[in-house]
Each structure stands twice: as structure tokens, then as C-alpha cells.
Image 1 (spheres, rainbow, N blue to C red):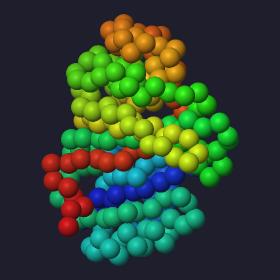
Image 2: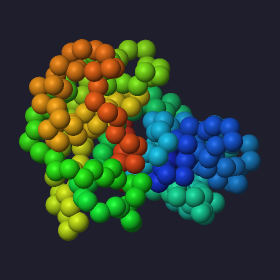
Image 3: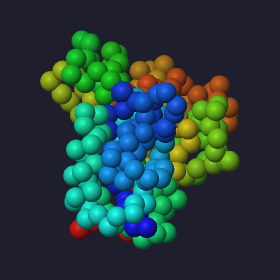
Length: 256
């Protein structure tokens, strides 16, 4: 059976997350239902990451086996037609080898977290960015973030219900940048690793926000990391600002 990779974009607000759950709307169910409009006997699709409720994606990747030999363009166009009106879009489709797997073939995942400092309530971007009111110190957040780079036991920064076998991960990048806007300042957290623990990125951002607000010192991040204790973590940021932006593979299946 031909195997296809799908690059998927979605607004996570209406969904319980990526993974299919009974009686709750999920991104996986929306894509699978669109696929079944094309091939009624299609099986379960596999994704590179199981994003939580309210988390968005601009570069999620999933793989699916189909019985027909679809051209990638026609497949993506047909799926986008059947996905309406759900806030899910197939950005690209590609025929891939039968041993390619969206999750297990991945060598890198990138997330971006958006945070805005502004006083007035959000209107157009409510649910798509985390809003705080107090000013944040960029350099303090950057200094705190440097303590998290590299290979560590990230027990402090993972959910208590995380099912990963080991809390040890290698964090390749955690860059914090400021982007002035007419209505305030947006901060973006660019995070990269081969894989992540449950709630790891949101735990990072919630903790670094406390550093930026002056409630924590940058060196307190190092102490929290070394504690290897979930109770030492700062508050977990809401899912509204988190985006899965890219999944890397040894060869990009969507490259022209």
C-alpha cells in the first residue's frame, strides 16, 4: 500500500488535542474522517507529536497508508475540501518509503511559544498567544534559559503524568527574542530537541516568565533543574501560545 506523509497546520482551540478520544473532537479524528471520505477502509494515522488540548501546529507531520496511488497535490486538495469547516489544513503531501514513520523517523522537533505583554484584553488573538500584563526582562530570561541547554534530567520540567521511560533529554536550543508591536511586546521562545517530555516546553516558558517578571533569579532555574523535583518547577504556561512548527527528518519528505 502506498504510504504518504502529510504536513498539517491547525488551530488547537476547538480540539482536545491531537490524539483521538471518544466523544471529544480531536485533530486526528478530523483528518481520519476526511481520509475516510476518500478511502472508507483507511487505517489509523501516526503523528510526529501528540499535541495537547489548545496547542497549535504549523508543521505537524503524519503518515498514512492508502490503497490508491494518489498524486500528492490531488490528495492534499481532496483532504482540504473534506476537512472544511474544521480549522485544519494539509499544507503538503508526499509519497514516502514504506519504512518512513512520522514519529519514529523524526530526528528533530521544533516548537515556538508566543507570549505578549499588553494591558488590554486580546480580541483577535485570544487563544493563540499567552497574554501577561507585567513587563518582562529579556536578558534575565535569556540567562535563565541558558541553564537548560544540553543533556539533563528534566524531571522538574515534565508533567507528573508523563509516560516517557526516561526524563533525560538533550535540549539543543532555547532562544528568547523580543518583537515590539503597536499594542505591546511579543516574546517568542524557539525550542528545539530530538524529542520532548510531556509539558516540557510549557514548563520552561512558565518558569522563564517568572524570571522575566523578577519573581525568580536566573540562577533559580539552574537550582530547579538540579532539584529533579516537579515541585521545584515554576507555573506551567497555558497551551494557547504553543505551536509545533517543524519536524525534521534525515531527508525532508516535502522537499521539491
